[in-house]
Image (cartoon, rainbow, N blue to C red; front, side):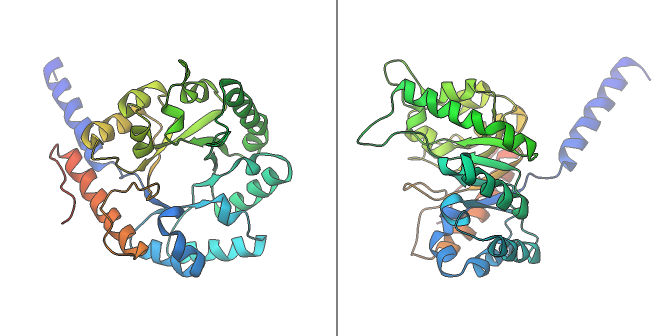
Length: 285
């Protein structure tokens, strides 16, 4: 076999391997079906699995109120429909003292391996300063050893505020510099809403983007480029679909959140397939 033949064979093998690669799992963030979760927790979990989602991500405002017995009941409902939980969406209370102990225990029962911080410091009335953000980042780092000891990883889920510069300071840059945060949950729509550049952010922290929360903002998402950059970046483990803060994939029609979740999943699957085929996906009518 000469060099040219070897090169052609290697290229064909690589193409074949890519075509046979297992698609990344697609999950649903709990806020997309929050009303259903409140009315019928285990029934909603089963419905999410039956409509074809691979994963569900629970929010701390919900799961941190569960007992161990409640959590085991939810895990049984997940197992019934082959649904997994890889991460949870947490306020700062889940990263300190007894809150961290409970979060680790319940995440272990659920099968989750990532504790994700979802909110930074400060309020609209008292916006955080750079020093406030530094203390917040240090607080997350203080929890990192216990999280690693539980064979879990520390994550961060952005909102728009982290991408908005104030006096030359962007909170997201401070958080990226914190190497204890190894699993960024990148909310695409909120990055765009905050004036951020999704492609630049994916390049900023290679290997640390565990998932992308798939929402659009004013039609600005460059899906083909973003999907390609995310998949080439290394580290991406699954996708999450979310509906929050007025952002979504498919326009809302009616008030049935499970129907919204089903339409989002169908659209995102087509979006992935068409992005890989290099043709644009059209949202449903």
